[in-house]
Length: 377
Image (cartoon, rainbow, N blue to C red):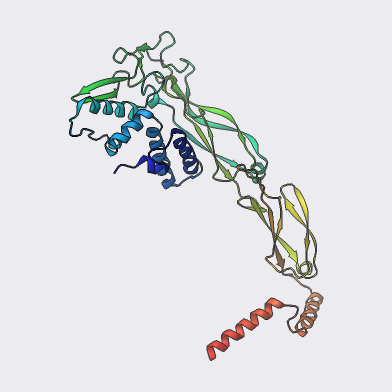
């Protein structure tokens, strides 16, 4: 089933070129794979958006699409009651020659299929490195240009020759009835050149297995799952074709003190029962050193205190998160007899206050009483 390209981009059929371009840019940013890692639905949507824009941004393709609709999208019959005629042949020639082959510099489709592969590299960082940003040297195994032939694929004492079959275009046109179809040249396999004497080092491929050392600038605030694209830093292409891209995926190692929640940092800190009851001041660790935090009297275990602006800086919009300090009241252990007696005396005085010193316990006991009354009613 063919898709409605106008509906995909969310524009009217009479939309101007600049309106189509704005709609495409907005949708492409929203569904780009870099912003939706692992989301297959977003990836499919991104492909549809690009397919629609490729047609609607080209006046010739758009006019053909507007005239033949689904037939153009499918590559089906565009002939009507008036017969096939020259228009039918022109439409198919345009469709196969430009949409599928993809015109490029140096002839349609030339060298495009020989582009180097894209690579993925997982970069592990400490939380401190991710927060401050860093320049990291990475060593990536990949196919690199052959030094012996400078990536040409031909032996040093010879040069590639223009393919006699396609005259260097990389494609040949074949007429099949009403169809005029561009196909990859069978002699040079789309390269546009033939090599009579291959390079002995790379066997004519123009590249050999090796490795590259790259310096990657990591912006501050990156998080696990973030991905950076280094254009042209992937594998070398065959016989001088463009290199692929290198995708650096960030993986932040677990930290002994902090857990990241978006741009916020969570730190769990124990406090004594005395500090929780009477209040006081404690030191809280942060990525920029220790901070002072005032604990109010009567603080309960699990209370979270927020220190604004002490979290991670977002690499996307520049905003800074907060540091969340969650305190946990620590129960004393290994008590002496004297300490045990003191606690029992304290407990006796607290119970004499009819739960006024332990509001949570009183609320819980009241809830239990109401529950038992409902059961026995």
